Length: 278
Length: 317
Image (tube, rainbow over all chains, first blue to last red; front, side, top):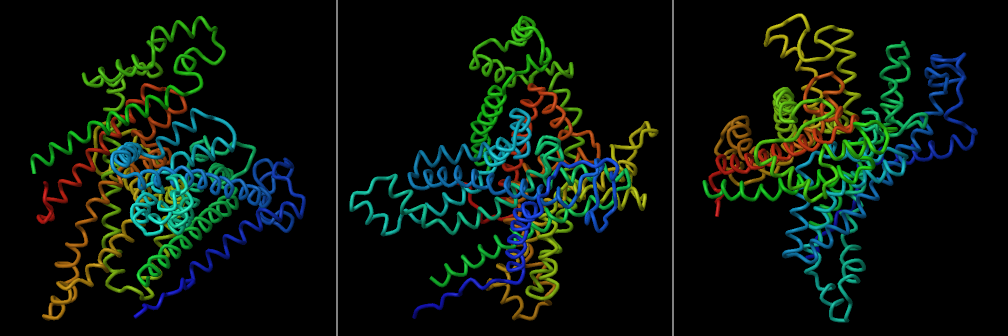
């Protein structure tokens, strides 16, 4: 009897998550272009203006339009999340695939190194590196990516450990494929499900890392807006009575990270269900 | 058992050496080392060279590593030139505060996560379960410092139930438990939010798994009250693997402490680490990374041993 394979049914929250992510990307990418918005236009006469028709989300202490800064900041934060996750997944996938495929002593050594890195809190490493390589957005993305590859590496290794025993690996070897070809053309593509699911969670984690670093003053640097530094500067603006600045960036981060986690959870569940069915 | 503990302790040594090497390498690939930080960005090269020589920074890296490690074996964590104090004494001042904060956060997380997970598992796929799951995801997705600030805004500024920050009120000279606890509650709640989400998910999953086991079905079939089955039989088994999760959550707690201590001006390890990173106080950073690594390794070891105590089926051979 062939068990019926349960298709990946889209749950309500996962659908809402996908729609939110798509909307957020579209809005941040397109609206500033369409309206020709600039995030750093100051208008000191209009500092700390409450939300109005002209400034839907009000203005900050320099009279900059909060709506514009939120949209441009979204570009920055989403880009940091995506690029950092890509960096982490590249390192993690290659590392995990090598450890899982070769096994034995190599696996032992590589995984001991992961254990060592795991004994150091990620935020310690992030602070270390971010303080050492003060600088631009690109370094921030690489630093966040370089500190979050441990979990992907472990997950990919686990997957590769079982995949390398499959018949198609033996077949590929029989026709004379070398290790590199087997790993990257046969084994890794078959671990794609794990990689995609993990990437979704990594983007969420990287966005929260950006927020945390911006709060500690070593993330995205002013005047460039990001959801993280908009949120952390909104905390001090609160003392100036500007209550309208605190919710938009906070909700933007919360909803996007939540959406990514819902989608990731759904991907993982539907993959597990698919595996049970064969 | 004793041999198991000894073997795990031996295994911890290479891990700790690894932590030391990583921290050391990271610090030495830094553009502009401690000498520049002490002498100032625009100091004369001769002055920088002199400071380098005094700190032993002109020796080859391997020699420095050796000197540092041999100091470590004699219980010497190094000397902070920025703070004019030995790193060991700096950490000794801060560590108890952070351990207290982390312990309270652990307690808060367990008190919320375990009951929540149990009730969710008992009533799985009901409206309560779904709403609780979404709430848990929201908590998980929240930037820690935002949550902390919201707590301050609500409970400290508006309601004035708890103090805004610090360790205890300045006018109380002596150690006073009630004020200490009042100062601890909001930071502990903030730090706890990181783990509550993951843990309640874990308890829920592991309870559902145990409820499907034969022994649970037998207990229900023989007419035991559902509550008794849930708490006396199922929860006990579901909590066993949870011990490992507690052990592995230490690094995240230490990391979270950096943010939490920053929000509440709480004088602990996290605050010291952040200050040292901004001052480029490398010897303190190195010493703190080492101590944290040791505590994390120790925590995992403790979790492994506890696992065996709680579950006698585990064999150490």
